[in-house]
Image (cartoon, rainbow, N blue to C red; front, side, top):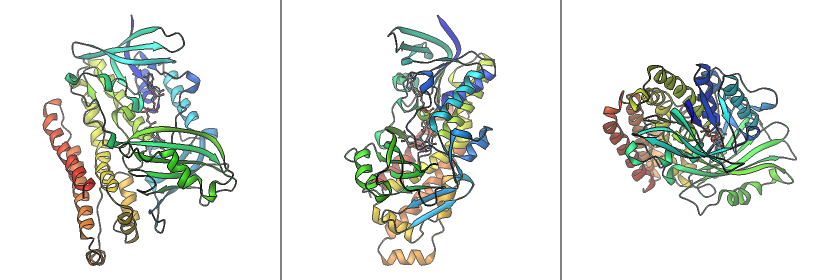
Length: 454
Ligand SMILES: Cc1cc2nc3c(=O)[nH]c(=O)nc-3n(C[C@H](O)[C@H](O)[C@H](O)COP(=O)(O)OP(=O)(O)OC[C@H]3O[C@@H](n4cnc5c(N)ncnc54)[C@H](O)[C@@H]3O)c2cc1C
C-alpha cells in the first residue's frame, strides 16, 4: 500500500504551490498529474498575471523566455467601441508569460522541495472511509494498470474538472457541483501578426453581449508581434460558440490579416465566488477546483497559487497535530475567505450585474461614467465598489428614463458591500457555517433574480 502524508491531485499552479510548501516542511507529498512531466504547465490560458501576486507570494518575477511581455494596464472597450477605459495602476501591472515555462518552473519548485511526482496517472475518484477522504483510485495511462494511493490529506487541485470534489457523497457536506451559469467557456489562439500592435503594453478587453454573451473577448499583446486572442461566453449561452464568435467577429478584423496560428484550444473558467467551504474531513479544494478565480476577468493563476500556499501551511499544522478533520482544516477557509475570498465575492455580485446588462446599457454606463476608470481599477484589485454618481448624471438618466438602471447600479454596490462584510466575518468553526451560508446564498440568489430577470 502506497501511503503518503498528502496526496495532491493536479500539478497545475495550485497543486505545485501546495506541494512546494508541504514538501519544504518535510512531509511526504505525492503530486499526481495525468500529463507527462514534460507537458505539465501546457494549458490554454490568457497568459496574463499581475505583478502583485509574485510580490505577495515572494516568487521571483518571470524572466528570460518565460516572460513574453510587460503589462502596464488594461483597455476596456464599450460594446460600440466608442468609450475606452484606459486603466493602469499597481493591481493591473504585470506580465505576459509563457504559460508552459511558468508551469514547469512551479513544478521544479515542488520537486526540488522534495515532492514526489507521479505523472501520466489519471485519478478517477476519492477513496472514502468513515466519512474521511483517505486517498484516490487511479489508472496509469500507459499501461492501464489500476492503482490506489493513500494520504492523510487529499488535495483536489485538478482544475475545473474537480475530479475529487465532483465524486464526493452529499453526506460530506461539500458543494459538489458548480452551476453552468457560473462557468465561462472559452476559445483562444496565440497568433503571430504581420504588423505590430499599438500600445503593446496594454491588454485589451472588449465587452459585448452580442459577440460574447455573459463574457468578453480579449487581445493580449506578447513580444515578437504575437498576441493571445480569445473569447469567452457563459456556459448557459451555448448558442454562442466561442470559436465561431471569435472567427466571425475578431479574427476577421484587418489586424489579423495573414496572421499565423501558433497555438489554439478551448477551456472553461469558474467565474464565481469561492466554494462556500474549501475543506472536508481529510480533503481540501484549491485553484479552479475550489473556484478561486477573479469572477470579473477570470484570472486564476495568482489566486490559485495563493490557495495552494494557504492550504499547504494549514495542512502542515493539522498534520503536526495529528488531526485532519474538517475542524482542523477549517483555518484554510478563514484565511482564504478573509483575504481573497472577500474580494472575489464582492466582484461576483458585480459580475452578475454586468452579465444582466444590455449592450445599450453598457454603452451608456461607460459613456456617462456611471462607473469610472477609477471604480474599475479599485474593483479589479478587490477594493470596495463605491459609486460616485453625480447629480448631473442622475438627472440625465432620469431624463432618459433610465432611472431603473441607476437604481440597479446602486443595489449592486450595496449587495457587494454586504457580501464583503459577511466574508470579513467568515465563521471561525464549522458550527456557525450553515447560518452564514444561508445568508450568503440569500444575497446571491437575490442578485441573480434582480439583475438577470430585469
Ligand atoms: C481560456 C482561458 C484563459 C485564461 N486566462 C487567464 C489569464 O490570462 N490569467 C490568469 O491568471 N488566469 C487565466 N485563466 C484561469 C487560469 O488558467 C486558472 O484559473 C488556473 O490555471 C487554475 O489553476 P489550477 O492549478 O487550479 O488548475 P490547472 O492549471 O488547470 O491544473 C490542473 C492540473 O490537474 C491535472 N488533472 C486534471 N484532472 C486530472 C485527473 N483526473 N487526474 C490527474 N490529473 C488531473 C491537469 O492535467 C492539470 O495539470 C484562464 C483560463 C482559461 C480556460
